[in-house]
Length: 80
Image (spheres, rainbow, N blue to C red):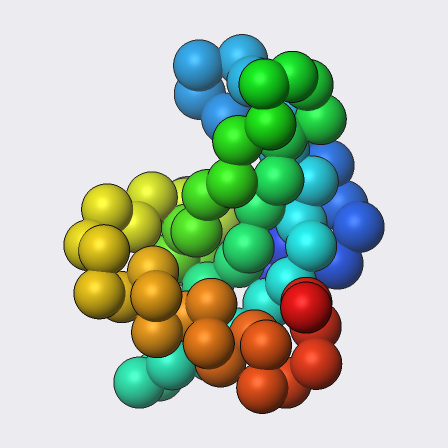
């Protein structure tokens, strides 16, 4: 799988589905902004990591990095 594209729906390992609402590159890493397609609404940031032919997502848990990515997405005009 290539990188996750805007609007693409993905299923996480726990079976929950999220929609990609943004992509951003920071310090050579590719991140995606994910929003759940169920309620209550969940927002996640994940780093996209290629391992051979496989694409893996590493959830971002660092609060400062999440805030930085959110600001970058706002600057880029992907979200308001």
